Image (cartoon, one colour):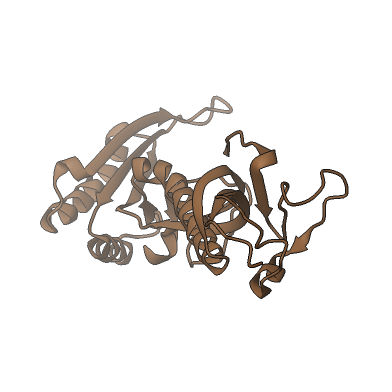
Amino acid sequence: MDYRRNTDSSQSIKCYATLENPKSFPSKGMNKLRAHDSLHGNQHLTTDIKDKKGELQITAIGEASLSPTRAKFKVTISSCKGNLSDAETSTNRRSEYVIQTLHNNGLKNDSIDISNSVNRSIKFDHSEKSKFEIRIEIVVHFTDFKKCETLRNFLVSKLDESVNITKISYLHDPVKASNLRQQALMAAVKSAQSKASSIANIFHGKVGQPVFIKEVHSDNWLGELNRPINEENEISTESQSHGPMSSTLHIKVEVYASFEIKFKKKHNRG
């Protein structure tokens, strides 16, 4: 992001490590005075300055975080038998147990997605009989993270190893996640403006409009604050982790900004 505005350099006093007064010095061989010289009443800078505009350049960092709002896990039940009816009986018995357990704990059908597929195995020679494989997948959605964790642990303890239960995935609101970088950017700009105002006050100046604002770097990561792990800067709205806290999405943005700085009228002491 790069925001620029045209300024008349002949009417400005640049304020970044040095201060310049174009009208107080010859156009050739212009003298430069260090910023701290003005704090000691330097005679060159106390010449009649009529509301001149300076420029103050700042870097600042803004951060924004987003906690997950939903969680889910998937239960996969499969059976492969020579008789289709036998395979159906095996998978249906276990899937009914899972669904009944979910209903008993207050989950409605709109929180449970069920898919069912049937496949026939390939025969390599005529002596082999083809088999039928039935696969049932049950995806369960939660907004209550504690209930999600409790139910998953219960099912893992009650079902045998033929049933696969995934780790819990924590999901972020996609709209809020897409706006998170903009929030971090705005926080960085506000921080830059606040820094500029504090510095301008030292020189009895006032911060005006931004001359330009540029995003120079950004990071996003999941988990602990101040620990970026994603170098590709791709925002994901889903993660698998040990808990919702370690799935919190963080974004940090650094900006480089330049602001107008206006000085009050000063009169020659002589």
